[in-house]
Length: 211
Image (tube, rainbow, N blue to C red; front, top):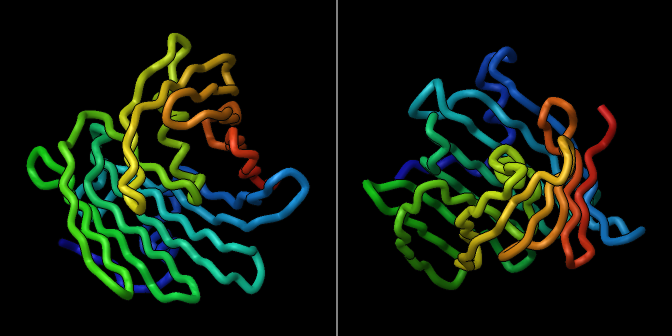
């Protein structure tokens, strides 16, 4: 299974031409008026295996300065939107935990390593499965992309916890998307479809900084 060096996964962006960059942003993560952290992310055309795929790279810091927890995420999607590969590295005082994922035929294999143990889980490669994480908000851009006015049901997988479920993403307006099911909340996008805000029912929000 291909792995990435333990560097800022956001640096993937530097290795590709600027013309291939589809989006780049910074989101402040808050609960009410309390600052929790910050996320920097890029969305780029192309993956390691295909110039037509999409790569999302993210670095989340909790808190934003002098972080005690850092989460680095890379998600590669094939041209048809299917998950090709993923990696999530979590650095915290207890040590480094890593999650690797790769599509193998009709399954998605997830390998997780922690300072204390290693595990492997295999999931059916359900068409259209969306990778999410409770602490990484740029991944919700995939949900926003697939939302419809009638509402679309999406299978979701949280690789770090192993949680699975289904959510429904409904466009209530050209820029607002309501989420129900495995995740409850609201997404906001701009006129170009770029994610600008994630508001979850647990009170946590990710708000994009002005460009």
